[in-house]
Length: 551
Ligand code: GLN
Image (cartoon, rainbow, N blue to C red; front, side, top):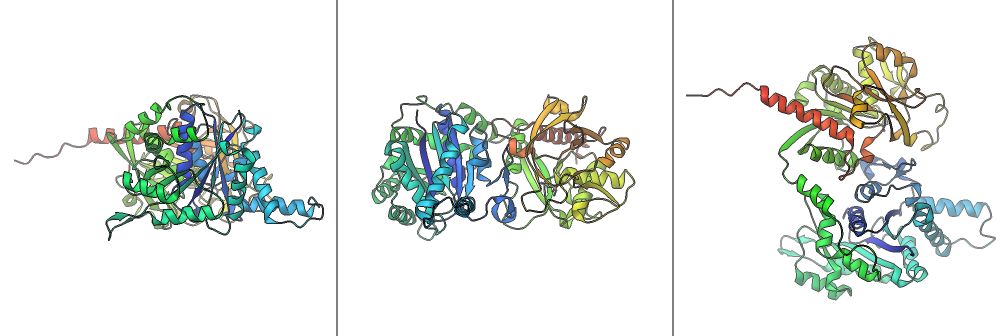
């Protein structure tokens, strides 16, 4: 059967959660028995998001094959089972790069190279590649266009998806537009005008959306859905209320309750899939996440700036998933490592059940992270270090236990003891985006290690995104002083995991396990870390002196 396409555009303003909507639609359609693939097209000119600041653009998500992609791919992978690749996300920068390279090679045979048809054709070619046979069988491709309709940059993308309807046949293409229905407090009303205008904008570009996903603070009442339908030339049932939910994993259920999957199938002429979606696993996850009996407080020690909830998106999700397995809600305490010094570290970490040091780049706030690691190590506080977090755990250990006071990472400048350094094979590469170890690598786990017990496997595969490695010259000293190298590359040159025997839970990894955690399949490292946090909390509660009873 031919692949069918849903194109998702956004209107009114950005940050409407288009990516989440695209992911949740994917989940419902997958639950209908379809093979779904999600794709993201971004209209900005960076060739990939690897060079963009996570503080501005949100996390850089890494795929199995090492692509540095937009964080929406993280949403897609968390909601839809299919693993994504480099080809499943591309930017205008990449499109223009391809077109210009081809022009330089004489590939256009003397013709004038133009946005239409050359750029739009390249967009269509990339869409085919993103959804074509290389991906295995695809029944339904859900392609999201970044940005907001009306942006200058997104015009070639809108034109390309407009042409797709003629190319593929109207029965194979559906347009879903995500808009905003704001609540105006002064008037006490939900307002439909921005949606009307946004649909008009899309119409002026030749696209009549079939379905409107209306984002709002509260469910949109029937009369208003009817009003939107009248003004925007769609059926009332095609106006879906995408109101705020307290748990993003409710979205597939919210969409299904309103019949979105049925509408999509009807529109695409589909008698495919199963009659009712199999959403039990989502329902079960949501049920378990409502008011779990425990609350765990985890300090995430990083460098922080304002407005950056998306900087550690996958990490936050992975912690949430790992909490649910332990019947716990995870409350994060963001501690800015720049504020930590030896005199106040105990105060900053007072009352938390565990400490996590996430990945990061650059030397700001490094000392504070090292103080936090030392505190966790010496006070038996469960600790989880990820990437930079593992590198700093090695630095801290060699400084304070290994007797190398100036042990450091060469990322932060020259030192006598570069215990974290660039491998020879990487030195000398300077192009941005060219130097990192990216994507999935195998890792062997040491017999008898905590890591092996947690994974229940002796060889694993995890995703990386970093330049520096533990310097092999210090492997022996680490082990001699009591740190266990529990995971290595199969040739044993690279340290992938460490742990501290004797500590209740002190585990760190060079890779980013958060990229592989799914709500329905939580990552074992997060589950084990939070289990240790819970055990500590329960033990402390049990051994707490009984409160004095006053007469
Ligand atoms: N900055 C460190 C490196 O490049 C760690 C990177 C990370 O934490 N993702 O190796």
